Image (cartoon, rainbow, N blue to C red; front, side, top):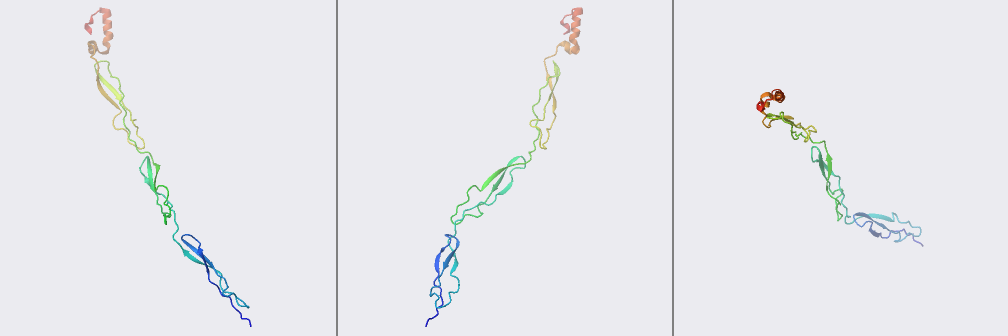
Length: 200
């Protein structure tokens, strides 16, 4: 008389973890052969394949730079620099991974509105004395152009015109006595009366 035998699972075969580091799976399988079903016995119930989680040492993680942090311009007007920095934290290096390559600091040029420039006087121009002999006045002028005022800077303070006393050679006696007309008067007198130089 034959005996009905239901199938029974054999032991699970155990494979390696699916990864060499970090989190993975161990895949395993089994066979319905302990014993196999016979004489119209039922087959094994359940799955012949399965997976288990496995955890190995953490994988190396190379560091990656985070975003640049941007500071203010180093000046309030004109040409300056913006200093910025970043951190190797996106992600940070771990498990013997390499650190971020490059510098954690940098600078960029920044160009703001021009700085105010106050005007400065240039040199005085040298004029001529107002007379050809004796005491007179020398007039001179200067320009607000060294440099000129710009970007709302203040204009030069003071006058652009000035005068100084000047002293030339002593005037002839005739000039002192009769003024500018003395010369022509003496020439006429010489011609008509043949006078001597007593009028000088």
